[in-house]
Image 1 (cartoon, rainbow, N blue to C red):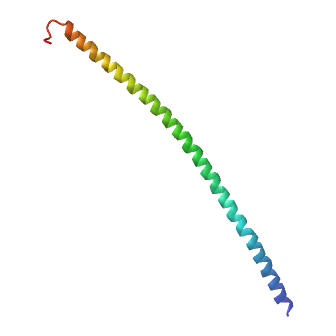
Image 2 (cartoon, rainbow, N blue to C red; image 1 turned 120 degrees about the vertical axis):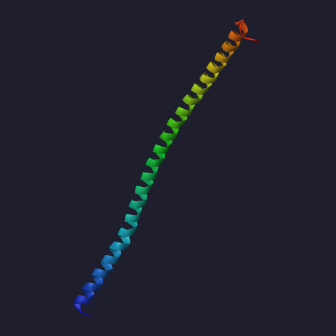
Image 3 (cartoon, rainbow, N blue to C red; image 1 turned 135 degrees about the vertical axis):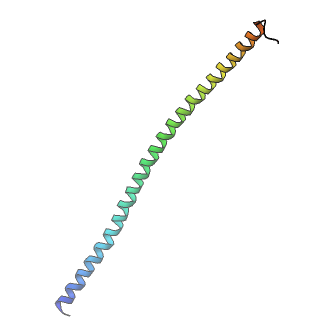
Amino acid sequence: MDTWLIVLIVVAAVVLILLLVAIPRMRNRRLESKRSEAGELRDTAAEQARRAEEREAVAEEQAERARREREEAEQRARRADEIDPDVDT
């Protein structure tokens, strides 16, 4: 065999070995990057859900307070109608 053919075969073998080693490593890095991004998205989603639950709780409390105030206002209006001599009951 000629020397150049042996050199070409050795170079091709080295390149092939490097590719066989590098490709899985690049894929693993990409997968790890995606795992990290997914973890950050999950953390963000959990925080957003927590804030939404807090706002829902506050809104429910305010709605209940508004119902009670409306009931009190209606009771006072009925009482005023009972007391008012000009209102027919």
